[in-house]
Length: 81
Image (cartoon, rainbow, N blue to C red; front, side, top):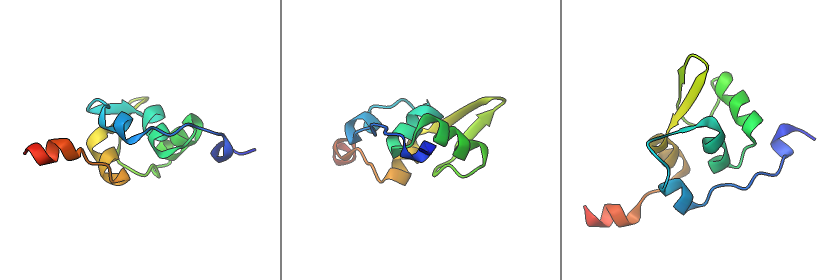
């Protein structure tokens, strides 16, 4: 069994919309349906599907970029604007 084969419950659209401004790679990986270890492997190799901010050993993902890559928009906020 590979890391990609490990069953991970992906985040729902509502859960993605409720995320703070930045999240850890584990949370971003769940949004894509990746396992934690596979997400960190992609982040370390520069192949994560969206921009990863690295500060020393800390990896963070901007939620705005995560939403853009996933095609998730907050339609209620867009309608109110």
